[in-house]
Amino acid sequence: MKVAIIAQDQQCLNDIQKHLAHTNVSPQLVAITGGVQQIQAVMEQRHPDLLLLEGIQLNSGEQQVLSRITSRFPDLGVIILCPPQPQEFLLEAMRVGVREVIPTPVSQPVLIDAVERFQQRMALAKAPLREGEVLAFVPCKGGSGATFLASNIAYALASLENKRVILFDFNLQFGDAALFVHDGAPTTSIADVTRQIQRLDGSFLSSSSIQVLYNFDVLPAPNEPDKAAEIKPEHIKPLLQVARKHYDFVILDIGRLFDAISIQCLDQADLIFPIVQQTLPFIRDAKRVIDTFNSLGYPADKIRLIVNRFGKKDEITLADVANTLQLEVFKAVPNDYSAVAESVNQGIPVTKLARRSAVAKSLQEIAHELARSSAGNGLLKKLFSF
Ligand SMILES: Nc1ncnc2c1ncn2[C@@H]1O[C@H](COP(=O)(O)OP(=O)(O)OP(=O)(O)O)[C@@H](O)[C@H]1O
Ligand SMILES: [Mg+2]
Image (cartoon, rainbow, N blue to C red; front, side, top):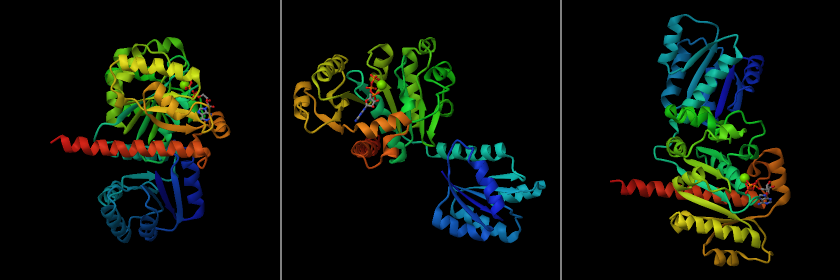
């Protein structure tokens, strides 16, 4: 979210910026000293989502400018920061399209609440009209890179393709997906949501998750086995149905163990990405995994095989993998030890930390292709829904 602050002097500007440094939404800030006469230029050049105006009297000239701006940019949020005012002032402010009036001296929690409230409204307004896609990532063997790919592709879909994305960590015993894209200790988990499955809706789901970006949420695995045991197979369908309604992409990091919960997840998925590497033990296990998918009745076009840690010079080629598994290779993600190790160690996605690395480029390509084909699906679904 982009926030423009217009304040009467540098001191006020600094104070407001300091307060905003404590929000969870990490806004992009545009800070300018001056008055309402600056608004037009700021709007046209910087396109903010939210405008914070300090030191406004709301005289008739200012009312005219604000009224013009809020009519021309109806999605813009305007918040005024000024000394406490009588009721009439508040009414005037509303009439010209101001969303909130915050009394000065500004209290940090009040300002943060107002900004986060606006951000949530914005996110809801952008919620998809059609249902999102569920993508499941499954390691064919331990250490294939399923968690790395699920978490980093999820991040790339949100940050580069501007999609609303949620990542669920279904490695219910030893889940670590959140740590690949976030550096704090997780405080919530899927169990907190399934415990109250009857009251689950999009905003409850989003507020129970870790917000990595304003359009990217992560719901970690529980950190204790007894909490994991609370999650039941019958929770999965309603959980994913709500998630589909609220997000463009619902990404599932599924563990190696096929149990009733992971099979529910796979049943609900639109696409499944088994992750394999180019050595025999991986390919042997991949064969078993693909056989399991066949026996579960999943059609071949639901499966998208990814070869991870790909090396052009490796003895086993992509053609060998495809022939042995009787499955086309959807993508090969290059082996890039230093970029990936640094990303995983710091909990910073590789497309952010090492944007130009070969592995980041490959993930960007995958995210782009998924975003493009989901838009195409949407169009087709729309055409055939008449
Ligand atoms: N393309 C890559 N290049 C280099 N290293 C990689 C690549 N992908 C993954 N790795 C490394 O492999 C390690 C294991 O990856 P990850 O944890 O994603 O595997 P997993 O399939 O989820 O395994 P598990 O079965 O333990 O959940 C990561 O910590 C990372 O360092
Ligand atoms: Mg994993």
